[in-house]
Amino acid sequence: MSTDGQRSVEASLERLEAIAERLEDPALDLDEAVKLYEEGLRLYEECAKRLDAADLRITQLAEALAKQAGQTKER
Image (cartoon, rainbow, N blue to C red; front, side, top):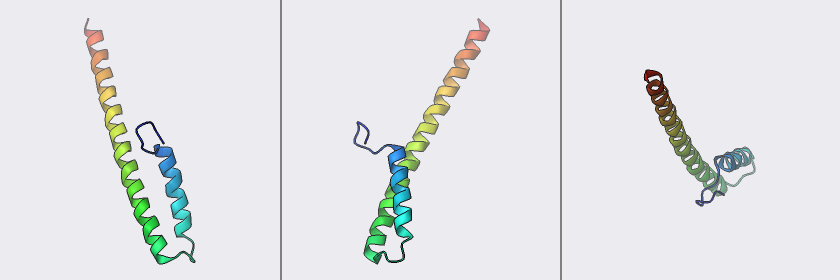
């Protein structure tokens, strides 16, 4: 887990893979399958939010860098 108490994206993706493999087991109990599915949905949503936030931050940094480069050329 990271310092803020959240799993890393990589750890969440590994857990999602493990859940997917487990859900493929035909002997899996229905209640357990539902619990795993719910956990998987939570992990997916968490990963999607964190990746969206990272994408936004990268876009903001790229725009700031482009703006700064444009100002440097004007001088």
